[in-house]
Image 1: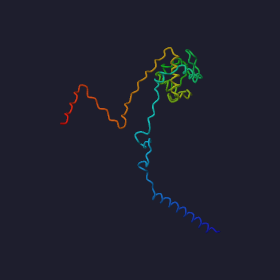
Image 2: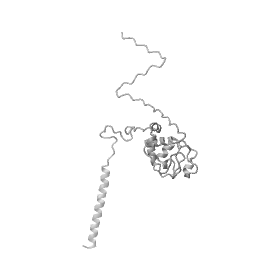
Image 3: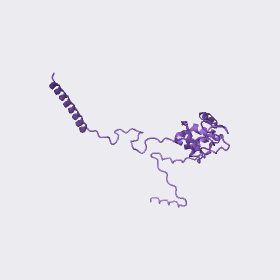
Length: 216
């Protein structure tokens, strides 16, 4: 078979490919599918995209004050084992990789004299280690104060952090009082479907409406 015959086969294959491509484009234009404006079959319990509610609201967990109110310092002593590699807790204890933590709750950042704090912590020396500040630090030191030298990954469970805070607060000359638990606002329940709305009570001091005369 000479070169001319090969050229004919190649041209035929190319024309076939072009014809298939044109057919695909024309078919897509002729049978374009428009998205549905609404679901053909409504599924009970599933909200439409962009609706007011995508599902039941996720209940928030207890606040730090609530967790501290029931926290166990004894359990916190067990959690402190995660910190004992780098810290001491007894009064007058020596510094290790990290400073001694006696009386840390309520103390100022970078308060231990002679310890080589990072610039990030030293820059907050005027701020106190409040309950919230310590909780954020124990959760993730890297996120709480970016740029510090502490390599500890953090304690993810809020209950464990609260127990550790209770233990740290116990190891102090002047333990801080626990934060006050704020009462949660009560939400009014909506009336059941089909139930008649309650009649409004007359305003205080308003005269009652006169009864309409009976039909004669």
